[in-house]
Length: 201
Image 1: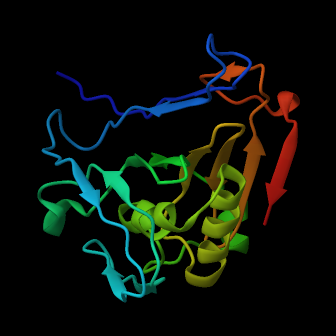
Image 2 (image 1 turned 90 degrees about the vertical axis):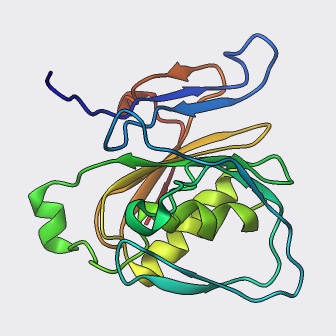
């Protein structure tokens, strides 16, 4: 049997849903049919230092001392597969889903190469979701981390709150682009001519 692997993202604006809610979803194609994951709740922290270190490269950083409570679904075998918290919603009802592979072309990567030990998808959600207050804030917060630490791979990241959905692509070592999804639109694929708002770095 041939193995196929392709992440698919679904984004639904608040005026495209029946009850006025924003929706984001993404499948997890991972590396095998069944990769055991656990459901956990990371408690809120106040004035408590925490350090994160990747099991897939040499990335590590100190996390802010104050963090919101968030649910997560990391890999059980994180020492070999990485954390990959995948998706969650923080205490301020900001949702995030990451780890969709995205690829920059050779010309952009020649200009800004990937950073081998940068912030990769295995630690991305843990480093962002507990500290953001809106979907737009999520884009800007992650963008600053990518500018500082670099990225070792291309990734697409989804953010939503009760009013907005943002789709972000990290395509090179330090550069990214993000699009606000129109309220009245649902996407399974993004098309540039429907752009409403961009954040670019």
